[in-house]
Length: 395
Ligand SMILES: [Zn+2]
Image (cartoon, rainbow, N blue to C red; front, side):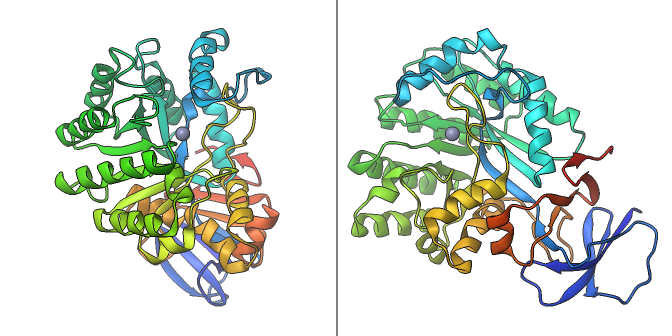
């Protein structure tokens, strides 16, 4: 039996100071602060704020150059040129590289992320090399962070012969979800693309997570196709649409129709707090559509931006959502509870019985934590302290 006592904690969503007892990886007790003397394995939080472990619901770990060279960005604008640039220049820098992924994961862990969903490129040039690199890096961290992968046809599927078979290989190798990419805009045949993706998901019991940048009526139509397939195949709770710009762009009537379709089909959304196309978090929340927030690519051939810090990403989201505390908390919800709902994480949160995945910050409330992004005093994964004051702990 392992125990950890966090004394004098301020727990997000709870009143007053509390002591939080963790036993065997779960929250065992929450009681008013000060009832216990100091004991073995006790940490005095001095009134600091406890948040549930941050969830990064949309990352591209395999692409990162973190810990490697600084590569000035020189891709031409536009999705297709970035796709080509990423594919062509990967070998020059040895991407995918398990060392780079390990280094980025380290920064994510010390910043309080306890679970990540990473899209991982699958194409005839890299094969399953990206899957292997990310898995190796996650293993090196020995349980400090949990990860799930999405086999992602970054270079298209129908337009890139051999990719569909490789995606199937990835699912056979235990990759949790199958990805898709602009079934119309990139792959030029939305029905065939989605039929293939959903057929593979059904065959292997996998989740689905589709990048949908296509906007306007073309994007809205693809939403309808995804909703229809999710319902017919009974895949509610296992399907995510990432970016979903068409929903952000839509006129109110179309937006409301799509939101109720997503809610009925139990489809989640993923966003990365983009400069355009911010999702209507409040409306989605009211309709019961889970939204997960993610860092997207971090320092890679697509852009030099990003650090992997989910509080930073929540701040970017909050700048679009609004300045009131409740708006800022909506952004933080997408980085925590919303992410857990979208990704189907069980027993996630700050109640007795939940997995003890936590992050402690020197802030008085959630809004301040997002705005200030203080150093993470402690990060706890499955009941173990995995990072302290920005430094990994030996586990
Ligand atoms: Zn992405």
